Structure formats: C-alpha cells, structure tokens
Amino acid sequence: MSCVRFVRMELTCLAALAFCLAGPAAAETFTTFTVPGASSTHAVSIGSSGAVTGSYVDDAHGVTHGFVRAPDGTIATFDPEGSVRTEPSGIDKTGKIVGTWADSGSQSHGFVRDPDGTITEFDPRRSTLTSVAAIHGKIVGVFRRSGRRFFGFLRSRGGRIESFQYPEARFTLPTCINGVEVVAGYYQNSDLVLHGFIRNADGSFVPVDPPGTMGTFPAGINRDGTVTGRYDGAGGQHGFVRAADGTFVSFDIAGAIGTNPEGINTDGTIAGSYLDANQLNQGFIRDPDGTLTTFGVPDAVSTSPASINNKGLIAGDYSNQDGSGGSFVRVP
Image (cartoon, rainbow, N blue to C red; front, side, top):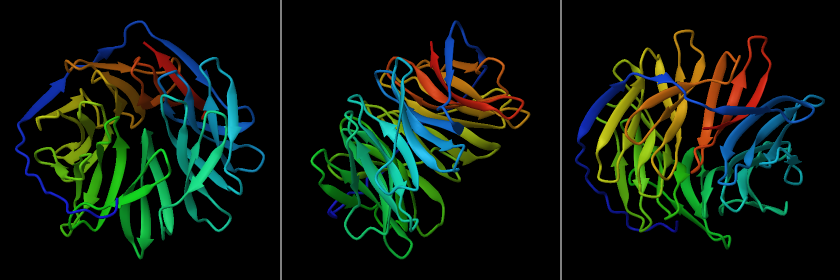
C-alpha cells in the first residue's frame, strides 16, 4: 500500500504443545485426475464450489500452463498472452483465478482470470518481478522494486495496487489473505531470521512467532484471524495454530519427521502434509478440537494436500511407486 505509518504491536503468547496421536481417516472418497497430454499435474487451490486450479507441464514441449477443473470434472487450460510459464496460485468463491506468469524474457508478472476466461495481466508500479500468492476479494502478493528488496502488495477489485513493508524488514513476503483483508506472511530483518506477521486491514502489523521458533512460515488465515503454518524449532519442522487472541498451539503428527500445514477453512479445520519415516509426504487433517487424522490417496506412496475449502474438500497431488501420479480431490 502507499506506505503508511505502521504501528508495531507487541504480542504476549500463551504457548501449548500438543503432540496428538493421529488415527486413520474415516469414510472418504478420492477423485484423481491429470490434465490430458500432461507429463505432470499440480493442484494448488480449491474453491468453495469444488473447482480446482493449478498448473501442468505439457508432454510435447515441457512448458507449464494453467488449468481449472470444474466440479463436474471438465478441465479448461489457459495462459496469459505471451506466457512461457503460467502458475496459478488461488481461486476464490466466484471462480476468479490468480497467479504468476513469465514472458519470453523470464520476467514474472501477475494475472487474474475471470470465470468467463478473460485474463488481465498486472504489475505494481516499477516492479521488476511480480509473484501472486492468493485471492480473497483483494489479491495479495509480492514484488521486487529495485535491487533485492521485496515488498508486499494488495490489488483491489478495481485494479488499484497498494504496496506495504513490515517495519525495518529487509523483505516482506505475504502468503495468504482472508475475507476481511487481513494478510499473513513472513519477513526478514537484520537478524536474518524469517519471522511471521499479520497485517491488519488498517495497515498495522502484529508479529507471529511461536515460542522457540528459528523460522516461521504462515500458510493460511481464516476469517476470524486464526493463522496456521509451520515453524522451525527444536526437533525439526512443526505445525502451529495461532488464535486471534494471540494464543499459540504447536502440533505434530506422531512419528513424523516434519509437519507442514497448508490451509485452514472457516471452522478452523487445517489440512497439510507430514514427512513420514521414509521421507515421503502424507496427508493430515487437524480438526478445530485438535484431533489429528492422517490420510493418503489409495495405492499412492505419497500424498501432498495443498488446499481445503469450507466444505472440507481437499485438493493436492499424489505419486505412485512407479513415478506416475497427478492431482486429487478428497471428499470427507
């Protein structure tokens, strides 16, 4: 945003460590899919209707394109004009898709694709690199203005772009946004450690660091301001939930090498992946009461959830023993 006077808010954290035993998932159904003619398919976001967006690499040319899969299974592919790499990052409840594309000179730009297929390309003013993270009404992302400095940005429905920077940060990388324009992400300052943050709709910032963290990576925020993500701490990578009142809960899948939440929905259900003893990703769900449930695509050796919607549908990727795989939608 046009730079405003940021208010640094101090946060008192009540930390609780919750190492929960995880059980197998109850009744569930999986739909797997690949984009026709693709050598790989990568789902990144699922909307409230069950539409899924992501990217795929075409088998003929090895080029990355965007796709959207409708709830009925119909798949449409797309690229901004002149794109040599298209990477969607989010889809909202109206079916708008946002992401990043690269031109022939390897310059990265932002785009928004309307439900009718119209694509609008954009960049913040004086950007030398634009990367889009998410959409929820407004679009949030990061851009580089000069040298190696990265700033966050918000793009309104009308196309107005405002930049922002965490106070005294070397760079600011927003990762997610909720329906009331609260943004979460991470930043680095002079201590060279990655710290989490929340940026409120009024432009004020709140630091988000679980106790004992050596690096914090928020991944999702819901409407009430609950943030989830992972942090690096003693014993490796752990999941965390930060409630709107500032309370932290840390959690891990029993026996996991690392735990990596990817998204949170309105009721506080979290989906993500964990690294098992074979160093393969597997899926998990954390209910609002803290119950952890593990799951995997049938017959797959790895399952990597990427997004959860308010109906509890989860989208992500899977791999088979023979190296094949694709994307999935899990219906609870």
